[in-house]
Image 1 (spheres, rainbow, N blue to C red):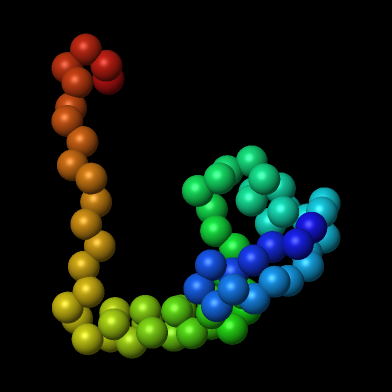
Image 2 (image 1 turned 30 degrees about the horizontal axis):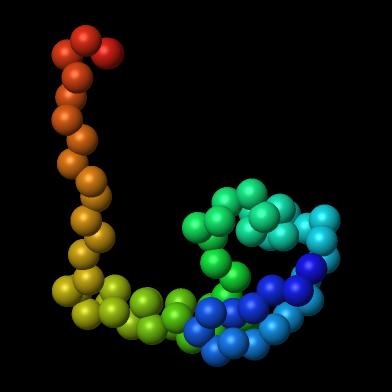
Length: 68
């Protein structure tokens, strides 16, 4: 299966029966990142976490009194 990195437009080949290929086929919102982009983004995210100003905001869910 040929996949394309949306950041650098590099085309790579992954095994059609691999778990990654199945995830990409069945869930359209998942993106393939090439190993270089994945490493670079991971490194930069860890640097941003280390600054202490990086916040992950979770969705506030309303409590339904009828479902418990």
